Amino acid sequence: MAETPKWTISQLAAEVEEVLAKGIAGDGPLIEGRAMHVKASPELGNSDKIVMGTASLPPHFSTVPHSHAAEEVAVVISGSGWLDIDGKSHAMKVGTVIFASSNLPHQTHSGPDGLTVLWFYAPPGSEARWLESDAKEEDPR
Image 1 (cartoon, rainbow, N blue to C red):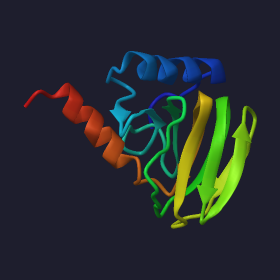
Image 2: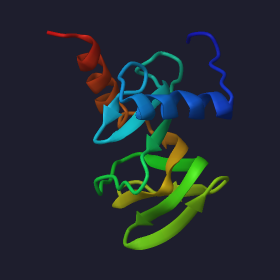
Image 3: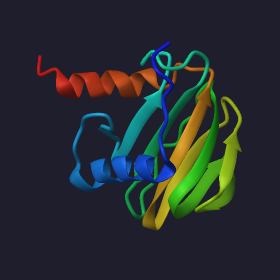
Image 4: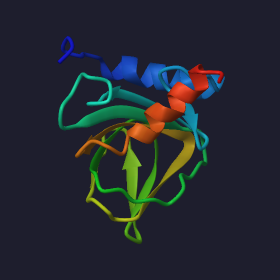
């Protein structure tokens, strides 16, 4: 495995929020209107069994309802919003830690100041689509 990755919460938030503000690609492509950074993943060679990253949603934004095989933990690092999991709404603000079981339909909504989360997935695999999207942004073919 590569060198041990290390970040600060403020660094992670600043990176992904800059991507959202500028609408740029790179380490955090805009995907379906939100910024995504995959920071640790088997695909990147710096983890084996878990994925970690950040997402930043603009104000008053909702993700597409979705589900995935991975279990997910999200930690709110800026802004606020709510997460609908299997038809139940859960308010979120800075410091909230929330768990979504695998295969449960869920949808994230941001409040008036947007929403930035640090997320963890296990098992890996769901992040591959975001990394593939990022590679396509960099490769003009």
